[in-house]
Image (cartoon, rainbow, N blue to C red; front, side):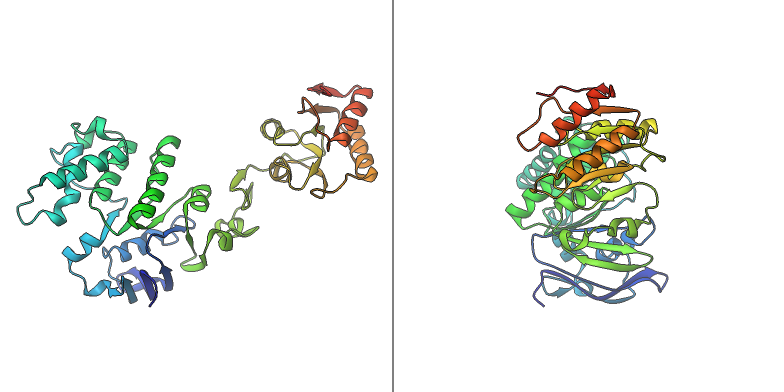
Length: 369
């Protein structure tokens, strides 16, 4: 076995009935693994089995070449910290008290914290920005604050492996990014291995070294984000029938407005996205172009527009494409130009704007720069 963390033909489930079988995972020390998949697919069951909160139905789990089954509770608590969705009992405990329980694997039978233990508690609370609420009753803080306190508790335990079930669920954007940055920093500096589930696919795609895809009680894919997020796969995994998810840039779009295009949008360089989404919200079908296939506006245009007139990236725009765009302008009621100026490779779109103006169809924008 060459991996730091590994499962062999792992089967998990409840009451001796397997839910997911033949789970094969291999992680090097310091890697981040994220489990993704629809609700109810079995992600939490896998995490609980790895954390020894559920007994595996079959197979083996190894940590640093040692079988999980052979580890005592004390040994495991110094190797692994766990933050699951289960509520913990915290009668009469401050937030600092809750974080400090992460040090109990090191304190001996009386649970007395040393100076080093207190320093670890302080550092963990600072890392996840909960120092300001350390004296507050844990039961009286918000869900987001509670999640951050529990994360501090796990970090305070100084584990080699961190198990997290939807750790960003109650965090706002600021704290989501801060927390995931902390995980990356800890894996670089301390070799922390992280195994977690996430609903935010764009975050999973960016933070993970490996992705495990769980669907219909089986593992569908295991590999790097590049191997997993192939075109069309996320729609298949989650059964997306309305709207779209773009695997290349991790963006979601709602369903395009139905019908023939009423508006033609001249865009490019990312300036068209807001207009595309506004038209979608209004229920207005639109066409757009001419966009290079490597343009920032191309992914949302492809998802939201009734028609996208496109050119190959880094290739000259042909007269035939310009003529196609002009014909579409003629068939639309109005034209929106998102550009305030045109670059040296955008002569065709400058020409389209002039053409639309000559037809009296420009209703927004229209500076030729």
